[in-house]
Length: 618
Image (cartoon, rainbow, N blue to C red):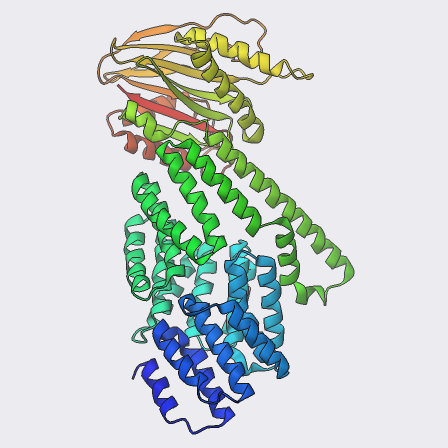
């Protein structure tokens, strides 16, 4: 017998009395996840009409309607109904009932991005329901929501603690117990214990076998899809997303579908399919706006920004990034984060000694400061990425090309640059003074100088371009009262496919190129772009190339990386040998191999510098 049939049968045999009526509502709250929205709606209406004159009946019916609307918003406004339920329980002096309504109101606050109110509400719900365990289902929902909120804030340890606490109040094989088990699995998945996650997901799937629990089944499939996404197993991830989407589309689970579409968009983006990625991202944006789920809309904006960037539409990318930043401020304001942290530790604050409390508050302030700095640096990364040509744009000009770009920090001093002038393509790899934020700031100055030398001063000779770039960089830094020595090393190519010639100039960084399998090197001028003691004009070298000639532009980060069995530098000769062995392989294979070799060499040691290399087969 299905859950719906069982509830219907119990309603048919109902003989009256508030105690039995409450048991029927409690059974609905416990098994509601096993019902479709339409089935839930039918049961709620039948319960609502049993004792219309009873005050207790009114309280329970309002709570049941609020539960329905929380998980199936097409049927009504959950917050409005739950507010009525909360007031009705207050009139009846029922703290546990009030707490049950609050446990569901948390969903509204969370989805609206009002996380400070969500956390305050969830703490009140836990405190109120703990007075009386007759609403145990909602106590577990409250613990689940407390875990979710801390999960959103990436405080996985606290989130895991709430999921585990919830599981102490209910059997794992119940609907809410399985939901808490899934939450716990996600906590492990997003922390450092990923291997525990898959076992828990599989356990949860086994627990709902044969129970027609479509909500949880679709969620587990989606979470397993995310697990494989993080493992870069995109084929398995897409397969599990498709299983989840089939259920959620059939059951009209619009809120949940947003998550599927967002992740499929990211998968398509990683597979260099931006048009397909935009299809899924647009569906996610449409549903997020329809349901007014700000917290998901915020994530969708960031994904769409990245898609437009991959398409080379930097204007649209910037517009969506601004939308992302605006909604992020709404969701994750500093004041909200401060309140959330304080409220989630309320029970500790009441028992801690004063010195420990002061120490904790200092840590909270420090954490907020670090989060703010991190946010600013990530925003700087987006700005810096705007100066980099998209990889697919480079491949349009040179299909057999790879770009290896591994910043040491979130932002980098290394950058690459490309411009086409009258059929000649200019392409460069540069290493600015420093790395991290200082290096990134210098990179913006130097990239702008390259653009001006070509577009404003109409230079095409590589040596002349570097001379002018030096002038422009010096001019910029001369405005400072301090003696700024910043600048860059660079390897600059000019490729004319019509004449079959390559021009090259370099500041400290050489050019390596292969004719057939023979490696040749052109040494750079031993001076930087910037201030130097004995400045001289940069040399322009000209090469007549043949089809198959392969050129490599690079900075010193790869060769200077410490690692290996003795913790020594990788060095240039081994790098030449590596490139010789990879020469005949496809560009993507070369890129993956260089990445793996670098990571294996580095091992557990810190990356010492930014790494940038471009390989071009003509």
